[in-house]
Every structure is written in C-alpha cells, then in structure tokens.
Image (cartoon, rainbow, N blue to C red):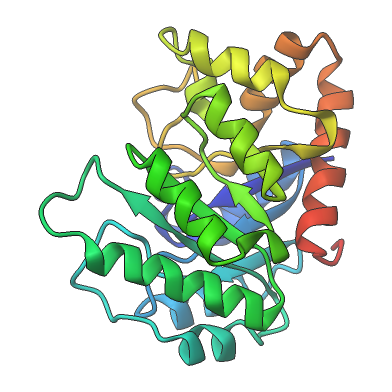
Length: 259
C-alpha cells in the first residue's frame, strides 16, 4: 500500500499520456499507489483542482496558499475554514515560510502562515508545512499559534535533525521526497533513518523533485516507490514494510477514507 502524501496532480505533465489525466491515474494505480493527497497552492485554481480529481475516490485534497507567491488571492481564516468543509478535504496547506525564494519585508508571509494555523485549529484539520531557510521562525510561529493542537506534516523535509525533533515535539510528522535519493543528501538520509516509525511519511511533490533515476525529468506520483525503496534501505526494513507503515501513518494523520 503505497501512499503519495503530497503531490500536485493538477500540475503534472500529461504529455506521456497524450494529455489524458485518466492515463496518468491508471499508471499510478498500476504502480501500486493506492492513495494520494493533492495539495493546493492557491485559491484561484482550487475549484479546477477539485473538479479534476472528483472522479477518483483515492485522491484527497488540501486547501491553502503557498508562501512563495505574494500576488495570489490572500486567504482569510473564514475562506480556508469554509473551503475545508469539502468532503474530500483533509488538511490546510500547503503553508509555511520560505526565506530562500522570497526576499525583502516578509511580515506578509508570516501573517499568511498564522492565518492558516488559525484556520486549521478552527477546522480541526492538520497542517501541511513548507519551510525553507526559516527554521527558527517556522518553529516559533507554530508554537505561538498552538499548532500542536492539530499537528500536521513537515512536507518535503530538507532540514536538520534538530528541527525534525522540534517538529516531532509539536505533534508533526516528517515527510521525505525524492531529494532523499540525491547523491548530496547524506545529512537528510541520516534524518530519514532516525524519524520514529509512527511519524514518517513519503511523497513525490510531483511534478517537482523527481527521485533518482528520474532526476531532472518531470515527476509523477508513481515514482513514490523510489522514495520508499531508498528509505527502507536506510532503516533496514523491506520496501513493503516501509510502504505499509507510511500508509498507516498517513491515514492516522489525515483520517482520509480508504478508497
């Protein structure tokens, strides 16, 4: 039971499937991926994203506005709570802080992050956190806003073991993407080997960050198998055991219905 805990299905390259989304989903199922979480990055595309995945009960969704883009519709707590009422919605995000791609005065980014946390607490749904070059502020804001009340996941984790520990203490899971397969990711592989069994997730973040041996090509949910294979080796377990554990963790965190 492979679960891709974070992907952007509305942005995956469909050229290999002659533009047919059904072909992508068929290939995903054939690869043994039983459930997917399609993650929102803006409110403008959210309705189309919902319409795209509607025929596929194995797909859950989230709602949120990514921290990188200031020129998107700014969400209110009310907006997010209302949109999260959709029966396929299991989370708020992705949200967080990104000081790598965004420069200058960043209060707007921190305020957006707080809005998402407050909405998650009202909606009673976990958070999907994006963080890059913002370790201290990310953890500080999660603490200040009582994010541990709902918990969530640190998606596409690329930070230190110390940050992973801080997130674990706040009731968060740690998710690893194809980056864990990259040649220069030794420190990240050390973290992936140390996260507790009941707090680890795997993802593709497709169409981005394809794992080895597909690095540099468009990513797809079916490649989550390569992430599972790598992490299983690091942890000294079988790929099947790692897939089962991360799948169980996903459904515990997001309380998503099994298709």
